[in-house]
Image 1 (cartoon, rainbow, N blue to C red):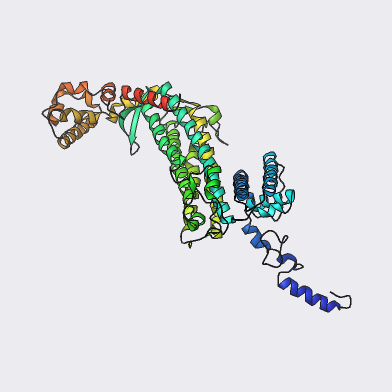
Image 2 (cartoon, helix red, strand yellow; image 1 turned 120 degrees about the horizontal axis):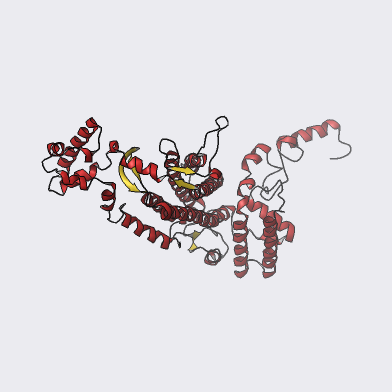
Length: 490
């Protein structure tokens, strides 16, 4: 602007610059030109900047981003795309960035849109122009997908270790108190007697299925790096080399699918959701068992809470929160599914929102596993209360044994079922148990009933008779307990 220009001319030019988004437009733009503003004039509108920025969320992937960049730089050097000196400088700079993140001294800048831009920006500050060479042959699209795949490796390992910790705690309880007897419930009604060890090992079994799911599918662990923006790249990349260095089975086969799909993220969230659901059901049992109405269990002081107004209260908040937090994890899965529904093939910015959902699911499940383990390591059981619930004659927990008695004498099960139903009605009318009915009532219900029925109408007999694989007989439970100890290395 010349010195001879009038004030009004300068004002008109300033208004024009502001309207077009050029520097000088005031609040309409924000930040420096940045790494991605080459074809634009001026900064980004602050509203777009706020919603577009993800560094505060994805910065936890700094290890994965630096690992992917290190492998990519090495491959670029080996393929002759970058000079060896540049690769050495890039590796040295990336190592320094890693040390800063590890020490907590990394300083983010306003232009750090995400972890990928932050690492590249800091690398360029440290080593100069060679830092700008690193992105040759890759896009943020395949870079993000690779970082997420690497992150899932670590997340799966962290979560499966925590699941094993809970399994170990359950096995320890089964070894300690597994011979106690309590009612098994259907429809929350007392149904049949069962060993506590069998119940605890049921949770171990279900968590084993969850652990296998969290470990991930075999044979599909492929590396997206090199897919570029979605159509590959013109550079002669050695995708097998980078995949091998990063620990993948190989490179992905289709560049479009590589950057478009979030299936592995979604499947990981799905297995997190099923694991959280298992823990929520374990929590539900603990809530019931610790109530006065059941009285089967008592949580220790460290894993119990009190009331703000009622001094006598001893609340199982941890167990209740296992139920509630499962909703958080399953909602993360729902978000991931809805996020992808209807997206056209290719990369869309929508996919940036996969990370908040995944990280929330992971963090919540990690907390749930820690709480579950803490409660299981600090719980005691009331064998007398459990036994009293089993032996209560009004519960008729051994009615199936009476039906099986008739079946072994050649009666069809449906006929036996009807006869035992009549016995239960007679016992209820008299306020006694089945074993207390006189012989004439037994034979009135069915001609093949006699006094020997009482030999099978004991809790011990009912348990011992269930010795098949998967049954609740003491011998079967001891066998399974020994097998789980071996499997878990305990």
